Length: 119
Image (spheres, one colour):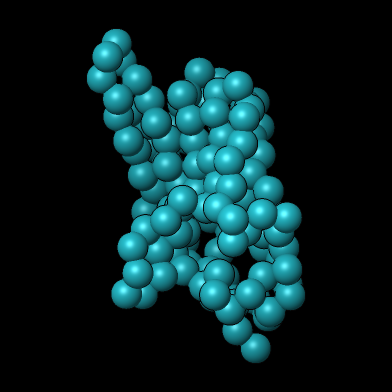
C-alpha cells in the first residue's frame, strides 16, 4: 500500500481554476493506477479522473475538457488541474492509488481536500 497526502483545495469563484496535488509515500512509477474521486454532501463518492501506469487517462463526462490529470514520477506526485469550475464541482476531493501484490489488489486513499466553488 501507499500513503497519500492531498493539497491545493480551497474556495474559488465560478469559472476559476485550482490545481490539486497528491504526494505519495513511495515511487508512483509502477503503481497500477492513480486517480481523483470526489464526494459532495449527500452524494456517493464518484470517479473524477484516473491515470494508469501507462498514462492512459479516463475522465467523468461532467469534467471532460475542464479537468486534466497528470503525474510527475520524479516527485511521486499526481495532479488534478481544474478549470472553468462550476458550483456543482464543490466536493471533498480524494486521491486514490491502486496497487497490486501478486493477485491481491489494494486501494489507498488520502484524507481529502475540500473544493468549494461559490461566488
